[in-house]
Image 1 (cartoon, rainbow over the protein chains, first blue to last red):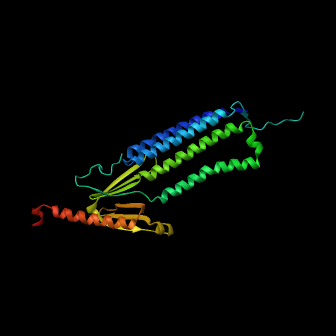
Image 2 (spheres, each protein chain N blue to C red):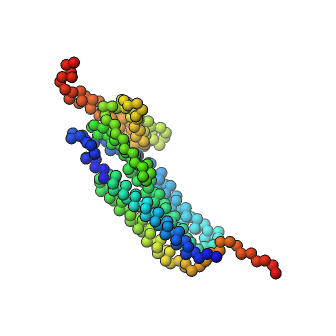
Amino acid sequence: MIPINILLIIFLLFMVVVFVFTFFNVYHLLRFGEARKRTIVITVIYLTCVTTLLSVSSYMIMQADWSATIQILPTTHLPK
Amino acid sequence: MLDKSHLTNSKPEEKTVLFLRRHWISIMKLVFITLVAVIAPLALRLMLGYTAPKLIAAPSADAISAVFFSMYYLAVLTFFFQEFIDYYLDTWIVTTERIIDIEQRGLFNRVSSEMHLPSVQDSSAEITGFLQTFLDYGNVHIQSAGEEQRFVFRNVPHPERVRVTILKLAEQDRLREEHQAPAGMSNK
């Protein structure tokens, strides 16, 4: 039996990857994108979407019951 | 940022004539794939609600699905934006002096190439298939005088118009250079 809050560690690691990708995507857009309002609008929309998704995720994760456990291997009952 | 009116290494009289990206149909395919990716887990959850309700009602189901959905949708968003940037940063710029080909290949790979107009030898437009014919987009191939150098504008709108424009600009640039040649050279 393992506690399911181990999934939070996996989620945290995934967040690090998402932040790295987000940073470089925004960097590329601002560094190499066309010097127009459109580029700024696209960047703002993307950051808004990421922030919204993270907020919703945080809310859903906080609502869940993390005290539960899950069984990885089935338990066998040997006859007496 | 890339300023169309102030390109790097530009000459004083240089003007941008064409600023091209791939046709919008390229991004529509991405949007469609993303929509399918967004709807799929919701459909799966709905299906599980009917076929395996005990699975969804399990005490750990809320926590697991919260993490799973969060990771999944963040991955979809990141993938979509990554592909969009690949589309948005791939540009072909035609000025009165040169052709610039900028290609973004993935996250850390960007290739910029330049070809001066006088070295343009040949240009061809390629429109293949029903969709390209109907929406008027396709590839433009530009052959230079160099050994194997060739630019390809992929899936650009109005390829025939682009081809004609490039050839006209190349001809005008050649004539301009001939007129500007030193007087001493023309007497030889």
